[in-house]
Length: 260
Length: 260
Image (cartoon, rainbow over all chains, first blue to last red; front, side, top):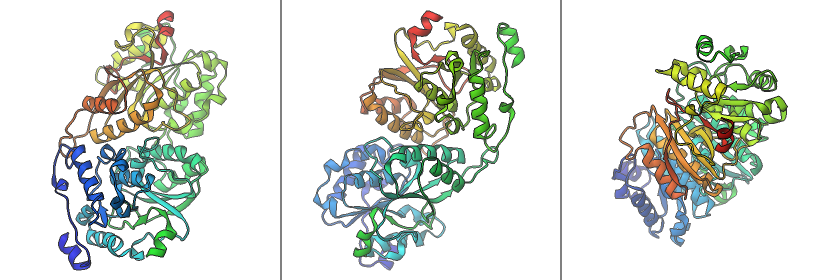
């Protein structure tokens, strides 16, 4: 990982917090340790970005009210990750602290073709290379991207950002289609009154087999619930739990286009 | 099933709608057929109760705004089931149509000891036998009971009833402990301001093994999230995906105690 970063992006230095290697039951350290480590790194003026190592589950347990502990240095940073890390992206986006992007994480190096995913992530983190972005992104639009189940479990909680006017992109992994359908019902119903600009469906991967064919595929399901709740279905996006996970910066696309 | 009912409860007649045997992908008939069948039976003045055959997934797809199609005969009925059928119980409870109870369904006859579960259900449906009720129920309390994931996916949607003042009972099946934790975060956060009387944890069964031990059991998780969100944890309840699934009528317990 370090070698790959040095070789392809020699203008950056990667630092892994010791906490990343801690173990506490399901988690890489208990909630207090993970929160303390995140806050210390976010507040460190010598760091330019926080790159979440992996998803899994646990960010919701340490993301609540985290903005109250962050300083001006935290506000200058880019935060990137996806899957469960979406809880932290959402919390920071809602609090308007720093910039956030949905994109590959260091753990993706283990995937088939994972080096490409990690290089793409570094291309954005280090160089703001526009080629790393999902090709569906357009100027003067507002974007956010989440894992569907992560987003579904944030609705109505203090982690949930206001998504009005946004193109919302979602992706899912390892869920039965009936669970995908159920979560799409939940999300489109909850967002019905937020006036999304529309919804794009990312990859839906590793779907466990139903006991009988569900009767629709993921895109059918997304289209149906969008129609039911008056949300524009805009098509697909190349985000998801795969090496082909393109970057989606949160917020207005003009901000990063002019910086890029 | 019919024989069992005749033998133990000869004062009742069970009628299975043809739709129960229909197939449409994942579902027992498409949404329109299932809705039409439910509405016709609910509105039939010759029927005393609607006993949902099974859970699975699909009720959220046909429960939205269903109360607008129901008549006075629907208002005199008992509706009973659990798991995904909780979507219909919730919708009817919210609309104040009829009475609702969380309890075994005909499909439970396939379980080990399932005849006892089905007899218990009929004891309540036919005779309002108080021995069928969960022993934790007390006079002058307001109750509701749901599958946790079913409830989590109803929050913020038009299916979600107002649970203020309620003792909320939840049960879960076939979810990893991290998914249970995530759903408990969601539910306790969403219900934080509803002033529940408290929460009781039913059975949490068929938990898939985590890749490493999660670090807490289901009761630890429930207690922690209740503490975090200021909800009284009242203990356990005998409800769940097992033959030992006791009945929990929705609403104020004095209503059924005096009728019972």
